[in-house]
Image (cartoon, rainbow, N blue to C red; front, side, top):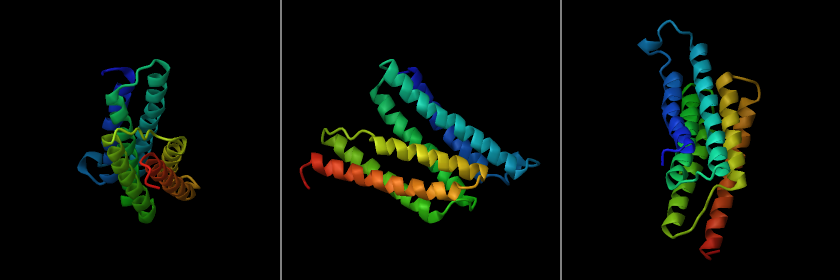
Length: 181
């Protein structure tokens, strides 16, 4: 249970609220005297480190056959917490469209519920290739928005489109496996 991939996923779980702290508490007494841009840089650094753990935990788990049930739960949870912290923090700062964030979070909650339902029926609805691409584009969009780089808003809307499309794929796959469609 305590293998490298699970430790990396758990680390991502811990880094998500820390990043959120830097984004939404910029006027807190503990940050007095630190310019807001530095807090955004710290948040971006934390985000990059946390995002890197996402790649490495999956790589190590597959390469060294360290895939566990705990990891199968921790990894997507850590991904959701990290993207949730980034998107909500950016929205609260006024750096991300509330509609884009609403669409992304609604899809994430719906698909998580669908996956739980599938698991309760003994089905495996693992992350698809498009789901992985969606996560990468979401993370890149968050990084661009955190750094206030040009194209961040465009990347956010591309992430929305990929998020909704991958959600459609999950729903279609679920109903094909349940023979309802």
